Length: 441
Ligand code: PMP
Image (cartoon, rainbow, N blue to C red; front, side):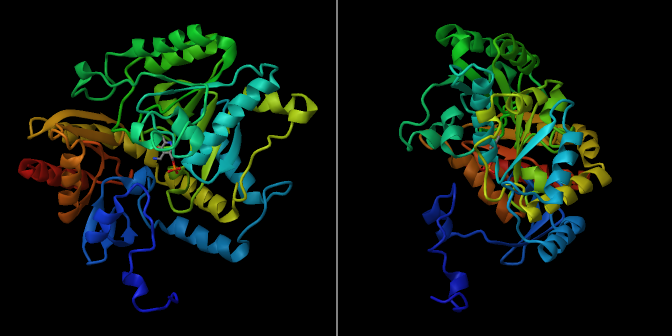
């Protein structure tokens, strides 16, 4: 069939959709055709309030003029340039801008094309770093139950979502998982829970089991997003930092969701005041518009390569599109939009209103927990026996019909709006969700 064949637009059979029940979708397609500010437009002409910033990525909202212009201008000037043994100015400029907004000491930037690639890159850098320091026995990696670190083999190995792991064979060896931080006694906590810092001590158990000389790195999301928004208990990340430092283990923060203002600070590391050795970013780096990710590395990590043995000076890793000119131009325009509009501060200012609105859903049918931090919120529903995702998914479908976009994972509803959201739109989001919850079977 030629591309201009009139039936091509209505043919849904060719696209194998990611993380989607394809048969179910294709019998009831939800097609988005335009986006502007806080709203999507559907193919049947309805406006849908974006309660999720796309997939946690459009932090400045949609179709922002500065970003649109930057993409057009860069496409017009230079479409592509290799990043191996050559460079172009915008990638260097973006790296500098990123360094300047990152926590002090996170001084070096390695570009990727996605969150998953940032994770793979950080894990590989961690192992190569230990080797460059003469500690080649440190190859083990430690993740967490219910962690989400993208979909590539390293990421699903350290990740802790059963469905994402169990279909794909043996995965990486030499991986351990710490427990997740979700405790029932913390239900309905506003912000960071009181209980559970001690869960970080599980790392000592793993260190005792294998010996510190075998462990390269620990990777965690400062706030676990894709498994239903698990907020770290007070003191937990600090404790992880203490233990990793004591044993010479690198600490990797996967900031793919928590980066770029989601918590009302540039990064989760800033918000929690805990300094990692490596940070994985993507999504909000380009406002979700052009695929791009970046790994930020501390000077210590970077210098191990620069000052290491001659054969290790080059990191034997990189992507055809690392620092792609159009992506870099988009990143620059995105960071400028965040700065110019003070969006990270705005997120911090509106977060208490968000928190109050979200927690007003307490007491509605099926609601068994509510969690929030910054402009992230989750409502956990009591699962229907034998159908652990059905209730929240129905809420998603009903909200979509009523013109509001939410996200679900298991029976948890997750929300993370663009940082430009207005109070009236927060009211509309939670008002619609409340109406839906009241009528849910
Ligand atoms: N890490 C985290 C914490 C994420 O939330 C995600 C995406 N939701 C990823 C990695 C993977 O990012 P991508 O889908 O861009 O590969």
